[in-house]
Length: 287
Image (cartoon, rainbow, N blue to C red):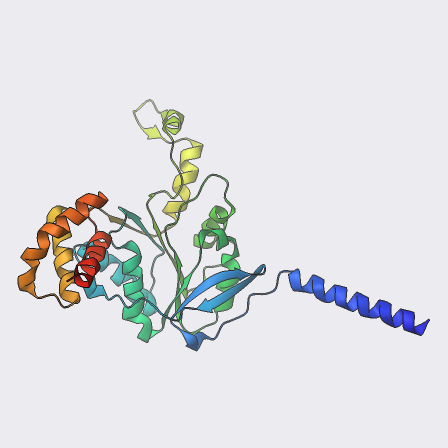
């Protein structure tokens, strides 16, 4: 009888261990000294903050033809690091113009002053409150970075982000800001039929319908909007020149590279900082 009970107890303990393994676990703190950047990942259903071993080395001086945008982001980030009031930031506009690179460059510029970055995928935004709880008592300043952010109607991360930005009963943590990049200014798809929901008053004012108001309400919770625009040919070539110099190509060789740079952009149907960077790498590698 005792042996049967002992076996039953062992089986029960083994079952409990298996159940506990799949139950959600509190998010643990990583080794904060391992890196200045971290990624939030799901492992077996559990959230983990993983240190980024090789952080992009891009510097603010590497980014050209976006001086106005750079000044706004750098000023906001400096205020944040200094403990002054600062805003959550939404960077929107043309692809490849430096939105993500600018955030990485700010991290490198202010990491020595305590700035840290946590990259979170859109699918994991529902776990933002847990991430904020882990870092809220830390002395560092944390940027939660959401790259290429956009939502389809009804996605759960939308409401989680909206609540963290401004809407939860809990006050925002003073050492956490959200920096997001997107090709959509309002982060959600916009349809022609939504224009029909606008109403007109007798004095000529136009008011958006509820569906449009809902879409605008998320982007409005970012205190700072920074827009990026397609490059002109001269701006594109200026960035090409900068990256060629970065890789050690003599200034005198630029005119030789210029026609190839223009063809490179034409083949890709885009003139942007990313395309200029990719051309420079190809040019230097094939010299």
